Image 1 (cartoon, helix red, strand yellow):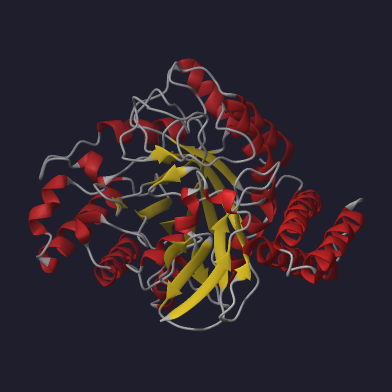
Image 2 (image 1 turned 90 degrees about the vertical axis):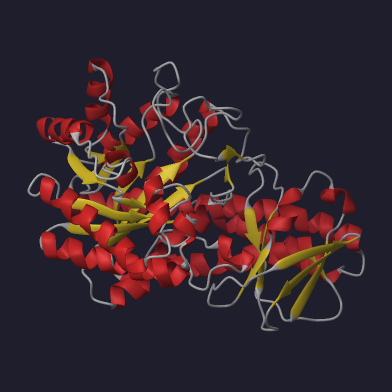
Length: 496
């Protein structure tokens, strides 16, 4: 059992800070260790199965940035506690310096003002590191370093987005990326339909097992048929699925009685995948076979059982249609859920295992749902998103990204899941304006990444049944939120 200790200074930070218990440690290869966090006064002890050097990840208040997850540099264990703010400042500077060197080496022009801001952050850190025996002064300086480093990181990443988009547009004139939104089973009204078509060039059609066959043997295809025909009529690229949703309560309830009968369970699953794909053969060429396969929870299936089941469904799907693109969706792609010690494979390792099996996996859909609990991603800065896409790009597979971000907090009458909007926020409190600003900041970065061939919003309207509270682009009254206009603007600027 390894232990890393950190002094949280000032101790007042521990007030109203439940996020400290969500902290976790990862190795130099980004593998998340099962981590148990204990507080003794203002000393945080992180216990894990080994004593390797590691990086602590924890949410931290940063003026102007909300409470993003920050990480330390790789640290060895030692008896004396580390000063947490100092190590978070060091970690951010290391990340910033390495990324700037990588992009500059690739020919990127550094944005005006970046050199001065970066130099000032490093100068302050030199002072900070020199006075660690005076925690008050060291931590105060560290807070300034973190804020400046986050500002520099955002400035750098936004410059990368602009330059990369300009380069891609010179090559393609209009970037060939899908920009879509997931639909509900209900057809939109006439006005909403036109706005959708003007904003998006793709749509997620909810061909989900629990919706199609809620009662064993009784299939209801009417809603899906209508949506597929509507997409065809309006020349939208249709992505069908997810056929199987492995989140809690994501599969038909009648399957529970077959939970322990692996052979019959596999037979039922494969039969539905084959039936659905044959029904829309030639109409849908892009399929999301399964969702949330990495974190799971459906039918209390083990990690090995989920992996085996997904592998079999990919094999069946490829047999049905050799030309279709087959995607799987992974949620919580930073793998913070591994800290609970219930999963052996990271999301990347899960996808890599399927890829290596040669089953015809065409791509991976990364679900990034910011601000939700218990299954969502914590807020992070823009540079962390860029690094995430780069890490997943090593698979050599096309990537889709599905996004969710709340425009409000509190009860949501049409939400069908147990998800809640988290207490911690992004740069500002949860609001329609914050949702708009978040999209305006992150969407250009995703469009700038060559590995990302599709970006989808989680659902269109809060007036229809949905999974993520308050994440729609229309409010519960059917009125457009400011975020919808921002997406339309990006589509007009960059896409077909």
